[in-house]
Image (tube, rainbow, N blue to C red; front, top):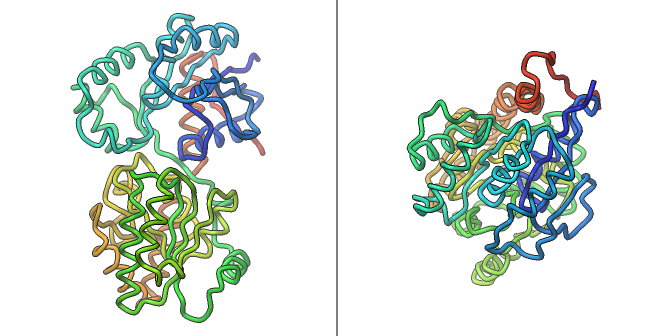
Length: 380
């Protein structure tokens, strides 16, 4: 049986939640049923370990990419083209020009420029492009509702496929916890408060730093760990320079591949984002069993049952984060219970297998809805 060839179109394969979802699809969907490749707009800057073609743009800038995308798709001859987010929306047009059988587009989140209303021109281009797809979906109900309002579309025009996490890879690991806490020099009753994600303004790490500084001022013995790298690094360094006591208690890991090990070192996971689609790092932290505190934005409110499997706070509220950290620092029993319920929530509702099944079913139905049986996942 001929495999279904899927081309995933991304701006780049840099570190990020959307990119990680594509990597999981390539790793886990059955290779006997699916042949997968990534097309990036921006030239890869590091080894990707994923079969990739690139338009080799040295930087993302305003240019008409449809002809270059069309040439690539014509050469690759995929059965399905799956573009993601605004940066790759021209792939929809290119796929239609090449008469690709299945065209999918998905939205995975917003940045600071798209927290409110989008420009009229962008809204109209989205309506036009989305109308040419066979399937368009979002990763959270909140994101779906946002685009329904922006485009004045009915809810039936969008599907929702939530992200999923591998709860066997991201799980409680006492050995990793001991090893990483020793590496941090954490002893006794010191609590580790951490966050994972690219250092980007939309992630609002400054609010987290201010909350940590307040907690220190109220006598909480803590250590702060920020896992990730990005354009906000300079602002974070400047904020730490204004609070030497916090700076001495802060570890910046940069980009790292051992995220699960770092999460195991945490007592609290803090996600202070101004906007989220569906946060992979929040799902991963909860799968590890870390008590999560997150802003009530985007898909966070769909992941966390407030007060049961985590705590939700308003965005840009360092006082709110500090208050909950201070309370949980004094209540180890509740902290442990939140972590246990967080893991249960993820394993029951946001599993990797559930996500993979949704993607596999969608791809199969787009190409041969009546002939193919139930999709299977990779035995690996």
